[in-house]
Length: 613
Image (cartoon, rainbow, N blue to C red; front, side):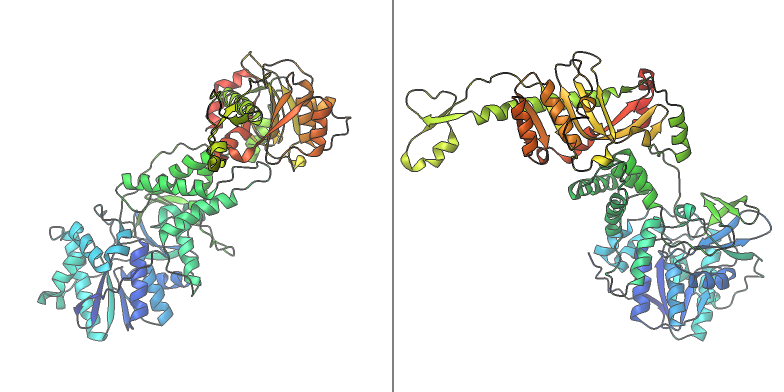
């Protein structure tokens, strides 16, 4: 949805256009850009202390590389402002630099910790209300802080500096924070604001340092991913106006695209599942009485549709900013919540982000990050080759699906044997509506006769991926632990390539066969090794046909059995019943394909902690 905002800034005097703002908000930044693009100003005033001006101008020229402008007094805390591209002040400075317009700082020179703003209406409403109506609504929420001496002093200083600018410039755009916007308007109209003495300003040592890319989330007003998208939009003169909601859609989609792993063959999130995740995210956001979601809600929604691994990668993508200074010979500044480690000694100081208008607090999300490469090697080294078993929840899932497939294949066999005939004296097994409608013009009614099923079906073959045998080197036959389990033969990825916990290895089936009731059979892949069978699929299918006691064998795959497999079935006096694998949902297949190998039954007591969903 494109903005149709055509608002005109409030003019507190004929030569001064006053623009309210809050820090770190995309929509206020876009409003400043539109104002600068629609009018020519000969001066831009920002509500910041003058000590930041020179270093801030240089740091803004280095964008899209993000810096922190740090001011240090004699004691802690240190004060800093990030060069946040989504901030209205930074956008005003950029516009001034591009248009060669002078920048004046009208903020009070004394630095102090800003008080958090009350809960404001969600700024996404700017798209519907317009900027003027939304700013008026925010001003009503913030109120008129006339009883706060510190805010009074800052508002008086801003009003005094605006009077001085009005005497020197004909057209000034002044950005004044919502925190004291109403008081600035009040004091500007009073006569005593024309000539005041605020004393000697305090002295601060100001430097500019690049921010550690891993800590940008704590310094920026928006997610680093959204900030990077906005910077990319700035570089394209033909791009549509940036929309953070579209950026969130890109976050889910790009995380899915970059998540592909040749070894793991991870879940392929369909557009429908991405849409389901966005709908889930919308519901979580509405529960929080917002239009724009928090990082916590984003990760929860990603985990809900793509599992733990997708949630971890979405979190990493949301915190990723693409523009990183590579030719940098100084240490980065490490930033946290109210903390900062300054180079070169990396001592930690109490820090105040002057661009932080809201409280930040920790929330706990249940995610299990992938183990490091070194930890995986340690898990592999400690593996006991004499112990191996399956994960019980996955066994139950496979057995339930096996029972469903055998019943489905039986129905297919019966449907193939159904006979239709004209109704004479008995409806037999019911009216055949399809045949009756086909012969509607004759006026005859057809009934169907379903013959009794002959025999049972004890073997199911499922081929998930039969075209890339090189990806599935692990071939094995597992035997049932109790009479309710099937004998399982399969080819899969090497589980030892993906150790996710102590005694827990993860793999993905390429294909499997299930024999129920269970019985002891030799390893299918060993006895077929010397036979003229070309693929893993043919070996698996031949073993299933060989050891099945029933004539019919269910064959679930993307394509029908080829001529070689049909010939094998005929020679063994068996019949393959094809069921298209596309008739099952992608989520069902994903949960079936992934399985875990445990290093003994004792590992089952802690395996769930590492396996997750």
